[in-house]
Length: 263
Image (cartoon, rainbow, N blue to C red; front, side, top):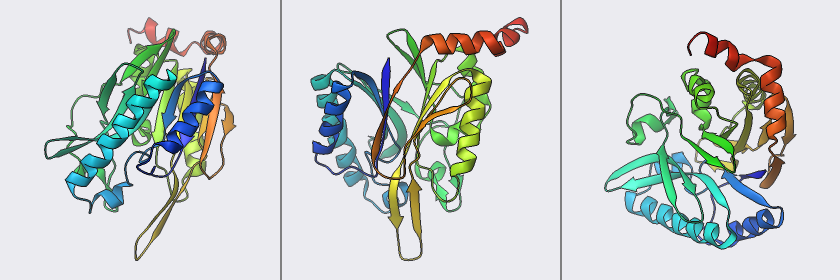
């Protein structure tokens, strides 16, 4: 099957740009489109000083636009979104299909002094549960960029039989090389594809400038980077092959070794 990653900065309120990419996906027979973090909403550092009412308006507008586009083009979308409930803000990932929307709250949030999502959002801290779903016999899991660093998530990748991990991210600074190595390791030791969609653009204030470098990519179950984008707004369309998954799993046998030990 064909899936795609779209790396963006924050989208305008108009849905014309999204419609453009949906038309491309339709022509290429793409069944699932992954958006990068903070594409539907303003970047986190901007949200910190934005009234909840404006965040809610931005989110609701993008949700309605994606509902319409998914129905119009018969394509599913996985996209990070700030989910507003009353006066609470949740950092979530939404799965849009032509007929429904489901929300999954991110479970590990960045908690650094310069970037503290854990303090800002109202996400609950509890037992980790990897979101997963099926499309045409392919099992997808959703793991946000920060969550990729935690081993506990990958026990569930094996248990749930995930074929493709969808990883939206907003990586910046000089982290590109480290990210590539982490993605390769996770894909190889879990015999899964990882499709990552990373943000592009910049965040500026009086004292600093953060550059988001893109480099969205597909990593194979052999731990090899198959395709990579550049540092500007682009779309990556890839093929997911069950035969390649099965061959990698048979060759290395990671899951079989775990199953013998009761995991």
